[in-house]
Image (cartoon, rainbow, N blue to C red):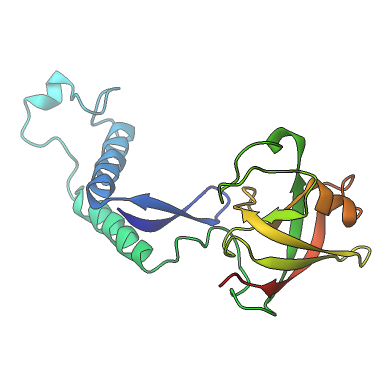
Length: 196
């Protein structure tokens, strides 16, 4: 399988893995849905009504799967050049000193004790964070742009899952930034170190 970039309803790119046969199946599904909307197919897209099954032409003139298949193939090939770790939004380069500004959120009790993407158990009372692309073990300084407070956290998870946010902080990190009651806050993150 090769990574490919798909766009969700928010317009944000999301990395996913899809094989070429899956892309062609998806293209066929798109064609079936179009034909069903145009009235060329019955409620089940894999069974054609009897009236159409006996006719020579079951699709409208100029209606072909090849343009859809070509778009699906381009999506698969484009995904091959996309970094699988880059999920949402602009990200700082994985070099010390890189800076990113945006919205941060925090997570806690519902995830406490569950396994993170790095494999370790999430502890809401430790200074950790979820970032979409920085390597696990990276250390970043997060500064609350509303009050100037900052905290150093270690990346041990992937996230945030909400489009438009750049980092998810643990409950402890949000407390240090005096941001628990706010829910989301504007922040600046600076990469301090990347694991070797």
